[in-house]
Length: 261
Length: 281
Image (cartoon, rainbow over all chains, first blue to last red; front, side, top):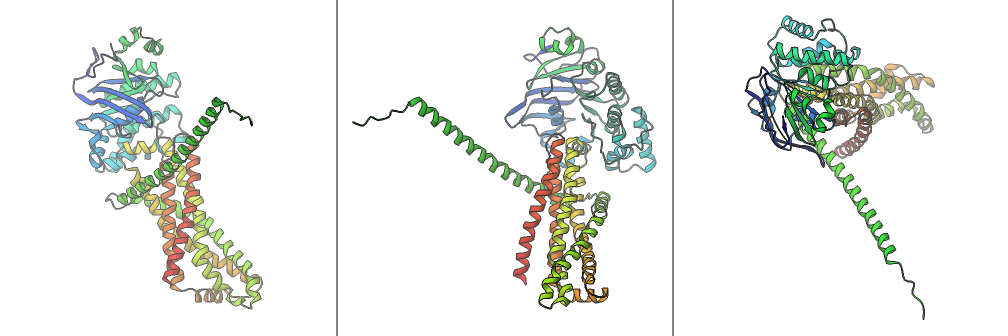
């Protein structure tokens, strides 16, 4: 495992089925809110086929990091190369094109309250895959609902769903456009341990089925154990440590130990 | 020899320092207040610029626009009809004694019609809509912002300004004049009822008397300003919702700020419109 001094962004997890093709490359990312520097200098890479877990305390800038990747937030410094495009320098149609290849699971689920589950799932499809006819749309919706284990939730409103179901539907909406990269913002927060494990398993099955590469933001160690190919720990705006799950579990660093023991 | 009182230098120093700290804190607070006001004005100008840009983009969300027209127009109609009727009735009952003093009761329909068309219909309808529609937009978009729904829309390559804001602003701009026409029409009916409480005037004669006093210059400027009122309600409601902070508290604040600011702007726009109409006529 590498600590903050020797962390190199191009570490590849050991023994995992990942190729060396880099999908996301972040260099010296900086982001502040007013006088508060959230990300001071963050560099990392996401390789094809891997699940990269970004671990850190609340407020360490994990969510800010993935929001910068899709330009929901504008970085103050550094570069983000996403699928061959410099995210900081593209806008309009080009940015939309890149975003279409990204699935984003929000912490709150972010399902549209005024729409049914079916309408939520159809929303991105109708806007982006305009060539699909009604039967194809229906088949796609059914397919993703089956994949998240909720085939009968079609006409439900988001307010009628439990926390775990909302996360599953939100995941279904994220994968409906067949993304290349999945970004998960605290996917198991607020869920009971059983549902958390189910969501973590779902993340793995989505990765296998849709051949996605993922960045998973979390501080839930059970989720880390189930999903991580490689782990990066953020602390005080820097990458504090980087390595595999076994390296983190064996570490005697007090900060890492506070998470894993 | 008169003995001079020697002040304790440390006490003087500490008093001066405290006073100076207080002064600099006050200055900073005032500067921050001025800054935040200017920032808000700047942000809102940029927001309006974005709305204008997206309004003329090719990918207009027509279906959502129609849905918003229905939401704003149809769902506000009962409230506007009731308010319009009561407005006409009350205005007639209140004006009647004064008109009677001058023996001008027959002019009551004309006076009420001019008041309703020129001022009372548009301003009361706009203020009611600021409360109903503006707060609704502020709360809905604020809640979408807090629960990351707007971010989710943006990430799925849908422009939230185009989908959420342009449709609402245009729907409010188009629906408000229609609602004002309804308010005016039902105001006439209310006024006719008011006239008939102490008199006997047929509806046809009432309408004939009322419309006889209205000119193009009464109707047209009033109609134009109702479009502006609608735009103000839409823009302010959406802006406050879009810029809501974090947490559920900010949703309430956004809704409240939408009503307060749009009501204030409606009155300011009305004042300017009245001045321009007066100059033209």
